[in-house]
Image 1 (spheres, rainbow, N blue to C red):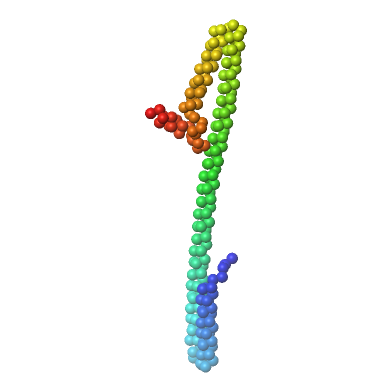
Image 2: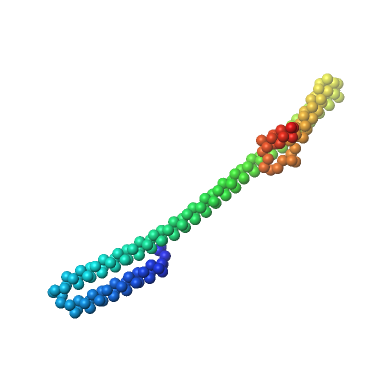
Length: 184
């Protein structure tokens, strides 16, 4: 839908008034003149006035359409930039959400493996105590000492990578860089 353009309206109005004035003058001249001698001159003058008016109105519509095209182009560019910014925000949000999901999954998996390891080590320690009570001294001592060594190694590893010092955005590469820097 074309919008109302006040400037183009006034240009058309002036053109129409000039055309009507020229036509009225041409008719007044034609009434007083001898049409057999100057009829072709009055007809040519009427055609010339029509051509000038047509050129005037064409230039007005061309300017109005260019102005309308420029406004539509600006609006389109603003909308395109807005959509591009919105897509960038959504992309950033998706990356952040997927990173959080990955961290949650890795923490859940780590907690599950820690629980399984603790259960296995407790079972081995219980077996070692049972073997000690049933007079399989060597096997019992071996099971208890292996369990103690595994727990000690697991504890040392947990101290090297403290869970409390990690933020939600810490990656394994950052942890290894942190521990290498602490060792130096």
